[in-house]
Image 1 (cartoon, rainbow, N blue to C red):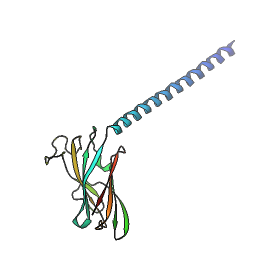
Image 2 (spheres, rainbow, N blue to C red):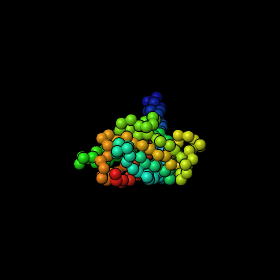
Image 3 (cartoon, rainbow, N blue to C red):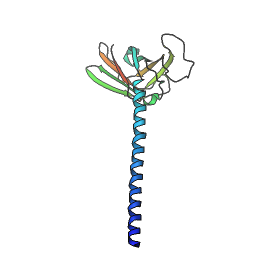
Image 4 (tube, rainbow, N blue to C red):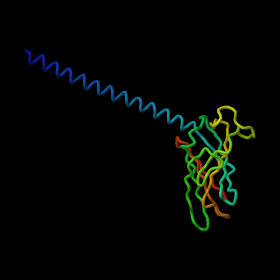
Amino acid sequence: MLAAIVSVALILLAALTVSQGTLSSASLLSESWKAMEERSGEISRTAIGVTNVRAMSGGSYVRADISNEGAVSLTDFDQWDVIVQYYRGGNYYVLRAPYTTGYPPGANQWSIEWIRVTGTSTDEVYEPGILNPGEQMRIRVSVSPSVGSGTTNQITVATPNGVATSVIFTY
């Protein structure tokens, strides 16, 4: 009789342990799914455009205007990817420039020249340092060696959540 009670208790304990593990796994799966949906929603509401791209100062700088065309405010510029693919003297270069807060940027870096309300010369006043919807920023990328004259090149800009755009420019 005692053996039967112990056996039933062990079976109940094992069933409870398995049930708890199943519930815990289901909870983790639910939280992961929710996080994935939130990230997917943020990506679908993010859009950027790149315009007015040109090389300057003998090709040692590439300047581009980036507009926030989505519904998400954009920050964390140190996590953005700015890639310039260009030619110089018959050689092909790919530069992935890191962000710097200093302006002008150092060799092979990029920085923000200004952030403004799109289509105006009015500097931003709402949430300075954040590229809000309806704003644009001008970036400057220092390129070394410089972009060769008479070449066709490309700049790619990508946000931390993976939204990217590319523009081809000539110099």
